[in-house]
View: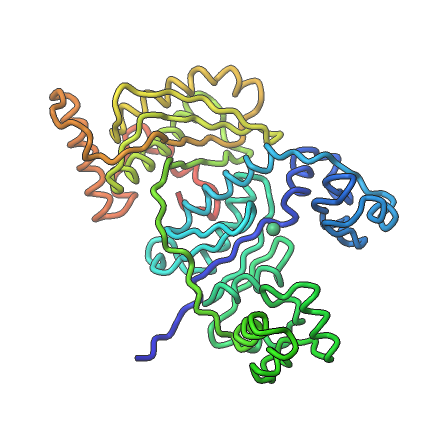
Length: 400
Ligand SMILES: [Mg+2]
């Protein structure tokens, strides 16, 4: 049977990740050539790359190529924190996320069309969210295979989005330089160049035997497959049990920051998360309130409840207490993002059923709201505190 495969694999890759984190956190570095690490360059900003600075290059060489180079000390904690925030957005975007390094991952978005839109629309929204919520540029390639998605993101850098439609794959792939093939490094490229082979299409025209003769068995086969656009690898479908669930909302410049306005955002976040948690038959014990400020510094506040639960009311109460304690900090620092993570997750079958009547009522209410929303959509029912203000807090172009 012939099945028309759609372009539904995303390869998302942060642009000049380490250097961009420094430029994000220190505005005086923006627009300047930045190298992370002085002895050996660990990473370079696009401005530095434009002068020929590359990672793994000696610091002296880099400074010779780029006399204005600003060398900064690595800040691993900041990279890890940014990476975690980005992966949280990845996992919020797609059910299957396969991380391949600290700053890139494949996302399988097949089957999400009705809920989240087409793969290109999902990719565009992902880019906006990473920019708004983490303050970094990310490039996304969209294609039918992992290889094409990865090559597409490399071709679209920086800060780009490139979709390879299934009927134009060869047209996209064959004119590219051989170095663009995944797994073709400097040594392999040199061997190919020595034979006068510079474009992917030229490799595709060769037989597998010829490529094996030039590159050796493993590499020859690999390059032959990729040049001929054969890549059966799937996005890793091992669904890892999540240790936390999170949602966050960037606060637009004109959005009020009063306690009441922030409370409405908080209600929306808790509502969405608890609904998702109940849908996954999970419960949690710890609520973490996450705050980000104008300079991209972050703070968290957490509280653990007496017993594991997925009840909106209990978790909202805990989150509101955290918001209260954080208000002085918020007023002082200028908040730009409010987020909630529910952690210490467990399966809900362990939760005892013998609850007091009041709690049972609350559960029935939660279940009823979930049920109505499932059947009629999220807008069908709104918690009282959100009525009339919900829409005002939506980010333009972004769904909730
Ligand atoms: Mg990258």
